Length: 116
Length: 190
Image 1 (cartoon, each protein chain N blue to C red):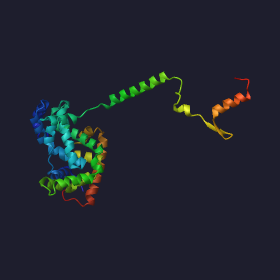
Image 2 (image 1 turned 90 degrees about the vertical axis):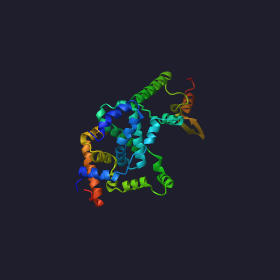
Image 3 (image 1 turned 90 degrees about the horizontal axis):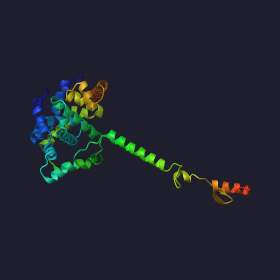
Image 4 (image 1 turned 180 degrees about the vertical axis):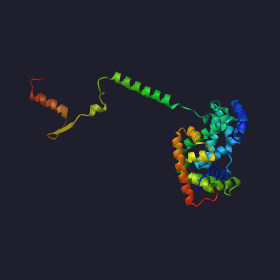
């Protein structure tokens, strides 16, 4: 079977002949609103075109600036209470739980009492 | 020059003056054809009406962007095709509650009027149904090639793809369409 273009066009025209655009009044109400509610509706439904590239670039620039500002403000690593500060390890010794670094420091002090 | 294009220049001048009559004339001249194209693309009468409605509003507002006054129909068609693509991508509540939507419409008019009967006839069109069964990218090229009788280069320009892509989609779409029609034994119209 060949899909001959004029035949297909003719058949589609025949099948779709009943379809008529019926929203003319809606279009006119949006483009030429007469009443105040109509004007408000037209304004509310107004289409905005937002250019993606400039807006995306501006957002990226803003985020980079915020990051650099923060990095300049706190140059010495993590803030107290931040995620990195909580990376201390807990150890259990003689039924009690200690911070590992704290325990090691105290043990070192006990082993070498002369060093303060 | 396409049918009705001879009045295009007057319409454009009127649209640029924001003339209501020019818009009415524009809708009279191209509304049905654009609606049928949108129906083939979207498979839904309501969605197609909305797409064409929004396209006319966009055309009215952006008539200044029309570069070549002799290509009014082509420009309108481009807007409709883009609008249909957007609709195709946009999620709708109708997909979540299709039955509620249909029931609501049916409840309004129990007896089908002349309009509904025509829609039913459209829905029962076998070739239209076969086109609707294609996936969107094939449906798009098939509609533009067969229904709008556009050339490969023009379709490529409209869809912002290469000519080879259009040719490939056309070949595949045509094969799927043939398969569907042969499966149903529908050859009466050829």
